[in-house]
Length: 205
Image 1: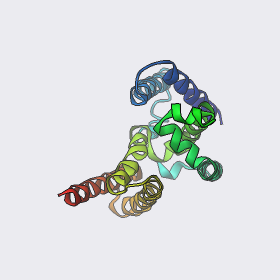
Image 2: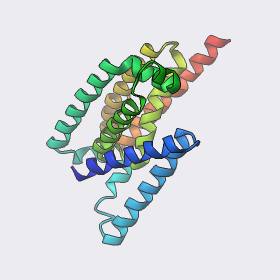
Image 3: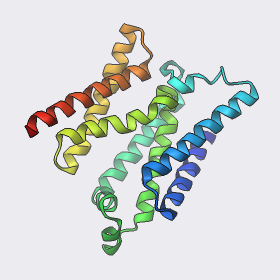
Image 4: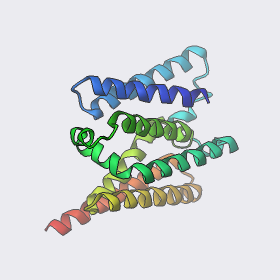
């Protein structure tokens, strides 16, 4: 629970800095994530518990507890509800925040809720996937979907389908090939990205 609290504070601080500077969101996220990972590893090494928590780097699906599955289910319900009730507002906010504000949308609230939900999901699932790979799972399914979709709703739907397929297939293949689950899921996500990228090039030609 303390990790989730830290993730929420971290996400809100990140959002605050992003809104106060002219740097892009990618730059701010990279800076904060690099510092957070380095700080965490330094604290573990200092306390002598680095080996005990080394699974956080690459993930260990066998270490997941029942309470963490419950947390993940609650987070899923929260994300689904947020997406359902704020889809259009979130869409406008992400495209043009000035336009969103002119429509009476509380962009700061929408943005803060969004980053908090992402932070919670990342913190819950980080033991499954690992620090080194979690960022890949945030990017690859969305990037793959963007290669083959032409509207926002299908973009979201295909992203979810790619994520589910990568997760299930990665779990199954990791069992039979004796490969850690996190890397296997990312490899499948990467393969999907290059396949969709190739399809995009063929369609353009």
